[in-house]
Length: 231
Figure 1 (tube, helix red, strand yellow):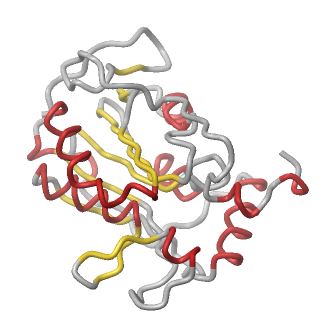
Figure 2 (figure 1 turned 180 degrees about the horizontal axis):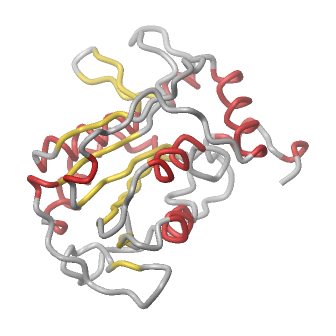
């Protein structure tokens, strides 16, 4: 999409909803619509061993001050007991709390701006350059996990380029990958297909969890219901 048509609204998905990959739960072993691999037909994954499960996420709250937020800041955050969390950060914490899984935050080595306009400009530059931003740290014992949840906001109708870096820097061979997103109208936005193509030796669940930034108050109940079907 040319720069001229990339509006401020499209950064956080305020355009027409592109709900690819966000269908209703199905009847697989995990209860969330089965799985897919790049090399063959869908198959039901093994039940999750929560002791070998990791919840990873990338989240960029645009402020840490719960008072006097701008619309952009409020759109990127959820306040819990006076503490400001990024939307995706909040969902990741809910998943980790419910499953007892370990939690890992994906962060860039370079500190990103909180200013909305600057952040969206960087996100677009990365995407158009197909850049792989350097990450702050890696998971040393990544091989110990069988199931990895990967969460991110939808930026410019895609997953942030930081997620590309994370997926490419780690060996997902034989792992079950479950995606979750927060968005402003785009659901999973085709990212299940992107991840499936990128991780041909993993089992990528075809129907991950997704929630609109406008529905964050409902996140505890929605995550709980989803995870009950996953367990």
